[in-house]
Each structure stands twice: as structure tokens, then as C-alpha cells.
Image (cartoon, rainbow, N blue to C red; front, side, top):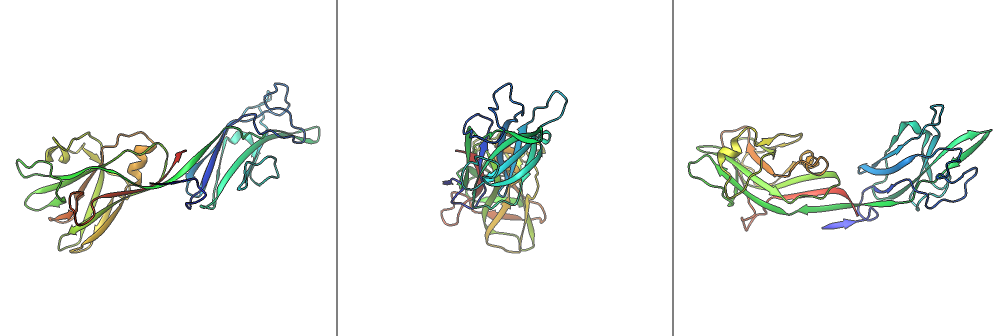
Amino acid sequence: MKKTLFTVIPVAVILLITGCDAFLTPTRGRENPLDPDNPVLPVHDFSAQPETDSSVRLTWTPEAYDDGNFPNVVVVMSANGIPVNQTDGTVVYDATASEGEYLVQDLDESTLYYFSSWTYKDIDGELQYTGPFSGETQTYLYVSDEVALTVDGWVSSLPGQSFTDVDLWAGWSTDNYYSLIKFEDLPEGVLLSAELVLYCESSPAVASRLEVERIVDPWESTSVTYADADNGSFSVSFLNNTVDVVTSYVGPVTLDVSDAYREFMEKGEPNYGFRLNEIITADAQRYSSSEDGINPGPRLAVEYYTLE
């Protein structure tokens, strides 16, 4: 497993920043944000977290004055450490605090960024500030890894045929076939990409198409049947879940399963793995399984952020 702070692997590195009265330094007109008599209201729960490999979502909870108006908030970004004042870096947001969020885009994928925020208000012709809000921090790690395979094999419509882990078949000819594959769970985090890599040992003599679907019903290799896998509620489709396989092809085939793994990692859907099927020709495709011994079995390559 390759695991690193965002300074080594090309990816945006983010520090989550939450409201706290730490790291406070004298700023013109600023009073302690925790002081109830402070004339400039703070923001609460200020944080920054990755949205893509080159963007960060800033969020905060604004507080309104008695007249319904809000202070302004200025957010400063720096690659040299936590900004300690409003000129200690690049201003990425300077507007009303009422918005509650802002997306910082076009970031350098190889840079570690830090964010601090201040609220301010014009009081008698002078800007008065409260902040910075940059105390408690959490560091996201970038992970580029291959996920361990749990089980792989295929089921057939042939009567009496049980789950078999020698080769992986998908499609139909005299019998129908589904391959079932499951990988270990990933930790909670923000997924960047997930690719399922298979090795095709035999494809039909005409162009074919391999489909991968996310399994939504629990199954066990010791008991799963073709009827289970063929049930319409056994699996669901997702975006970009097919790949065309050229005539009589032998070699690696890659499927984008990012949308499926976002369901697992970000939405808490159970990880029951994937079902493979051939959806164009009346023929079958054969892929190497983990038991092949010659060609590589299924691999799942992922990139994601997780908390340190």
C-alpha cells in the first residue's frame, strides 16, 4: 500500500480546519472571538475538505447579527503553513459569510495547502476582524493502492453446476454464465478513482461487450447459484460500467467502477462485490481467476483520500 501526505504523490493535500481559539495572533481591531462582547461575530465549524484531486470545498456555519445581516468572511490559503493573518497567503474567498461554502478550484495536485479564515466588519470606518479560525486540524492522506481480492469465480445455468473458482466466464453459449467477484472493504473517505482490471484469455470471434454490475444482495461462494445471480434484484447498473472487447482479444481489460465504490465508501452501501456479464453476442468470454497461476487474476486499483 502506498500511503502518503499530499506532498509526495500528485494530489491536492488538504487540512481540515475547524473553529477554535488556537493560533490567534494580534490583528488590527480583532478581539477574542469567544468574547461575548466582541463586535464582530465569528463563523463556526469552518472546514476544508477535498472534492476532487484539484479542488477543495470550504464550508462554515455563519452567525447573523440582530438586524439579520452577516459579517464578511475572508479565507486565506497558503502552501507554506497555516496563515496567521489576512496577507499571509492567497485570498481565495472574500464576501458575505451568509453563503456558508465555497469551492476552491484549479489547485496544484502536488501541493499541500493550508486554510485559515477571519470574519470582519466595517465599524466606524475601520475594518475590525475576528479570527483566525484555524485550531484543530485533521490531515487527509492520499492512498494509491490495490484492494485485496476476497473471492472470485463463476456460476452456470448447467444443472448441478456450483460456484467454480477456476477461470471466470461471462456470457452465454449452450449454457449461461455469470462471474462474481468481491474485494475487501475500503475505509471511509473520498474516492478519486476505482478500476477493475481483468485479464481476458478468450473472447468471441465477433466484437463483444463486457458489463459489470454492483451486487446488492448478500451471497456466499459456498451456496450461491446461477438462479441467485440471474435474479433481477441481485445486481444494479451504474455509470460507465461496460467495455467493448475486440474480436478474439487476449490481454488486460479495464472497467471503471468508481461510481460503485462511491456507493460503498461515501454512502455506506454494503459491499457485496460485482457481477460480470457479456451483453452483445451469443458467446462467452473467459478471464483468468485468482487460481489461474499463469495470467493475473482480478485486480482493483483505487485512489482515494482518507483521514490520517
